[in-house]
Length: 415
Ligand code: ATP
Ligand code: MG
Image: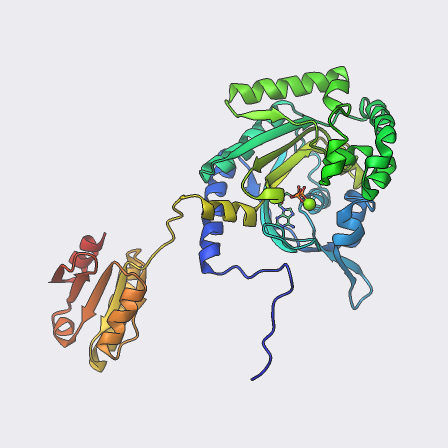
């Protein structure tokens, strides 16, 4: 036998059961996006590598070691997108939308990062995200966080909560950064190797280190929220008041950072305690510096992204019914002469919106087995008598009840 090929490590196939969960999430999310007047965009999976080097930055894990980047046959440096925001900003600028007022976009699709695969951490994963360009806040921040919360509510997830933080702005962050750096310098010998580097390149990222011994050193680390300038304080206060007014439960977590300089003020995550270290199901923040970083005019913006696989895992663990469409009617054709008639009946039933499986004709017993296996609600039995009378015999598989009637009556009965 020929050798079977396997998918790439950390890259999974979405099979029907899992996809039914994803589709449920997508349907629920789409309704919420519509309610908040966000429109869908479909952006390329393949982008110039430089886009991510310029936006995310070379000193981050994503760009330094996780990108699937390559040179194509024409010598162009391309990469499978590791996230959606940079591409959205590129598209926004390329379409010349900077004078259009606000743009509210959402997207869904695969992202690629060469991380260490674990449950809920894949190398190809799907994100559903949203970006709002031209949103200066703080009202837009409240709306954006409320929408994110609403998305999670729409799929009835339990055991989730929201954490927020403020990352300050170019006015107040440098002084805080120095204070934090001084604090970390004192603790230097107790920090992990990566944090030694971060301490110099980007000290705020030390706050986010997943290593236990690093976290132990940070218990009384200075916090950005205590060092905000007046406008940032006021922005953050309004955000908290707004979330409280909407009864959205949140806690302030000073450890939430976004490693990148273009992020400012609002940062937030929606977290579950059920997926261990993969507990962040949705993450986002304000990035007023990114549009200009990528060559556009200064444009305030805020966005977030949710991980579809992680949401799917949570949904599976909860008792939420995703109501995947089962088979309403299995059509069994008895005798070769009835085949065309049975196909016509199946077609008519489908035209009335029913989910119909034709059992393929032939052996009657085999056809009933198919109906059983598919958990069809009804079997339509079509023999020569039924064909002559242009009727069908409809059997309810749960009750065993059976009637012979014409197709209109059958449809009423099934519905
Ligand atoms: P984490 O801290 O879990 O690594 P992150 O901060 O890298 O997450 P973002 O880049 O903000 O995550 O992406 C937003 C969301 O996308 C995450 O909250 C998560 O749900 C999902 N996500 C990120 N990386 C992966 C991955 N490798 N596999 C599956 N889902 C992912
Ligand atoms: Mg990550």
